Amino acid sequence: MKANVKTIKKNRIYSEEFKKRLVEEFERGKYSVPQLEKLHGICNANLYRWIYKYSTFNAEGYRIIEMKKSSTSKIKQLQDKVKELERMVGQKQIMIDYYEKMIEIAKDELDIDLKKNFDTSQSSGSDKTKKR
Image 1 (cartoon, rainbow, N blue to C red):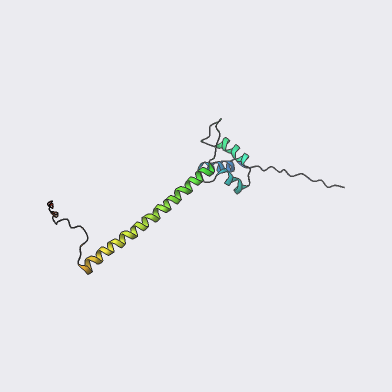
Image 2 (tube, rainbow, N blue to C red):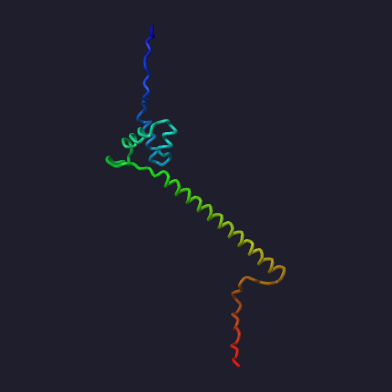
């Protein structure tokens, strides 16, 4: 004899505010659709349906296209370029400090002023040599 067993629905029901919160996170750029899919275990078709339904930016008849790889790779390239430029600026600053220290040492120990002195007159140069 079989017991009275009820079948459990496999479909989940999400509240309207939960759906709107996920759409808001997507619109702010906090998460992409694949990230939301993994984070909450929701199929991406449902997420896109909610985006079309609740999005403030989406007009009917337009399709949302997410350029995930191109935008993330471009951001990564720009971050790498910034790091490289910061490294170069750091190296240049080290060289400037080194040269200033060398000028200071030359002035103190050798009594040579390597910095340009603006109040000295220009040299007259050398006279032209006569051809023989």
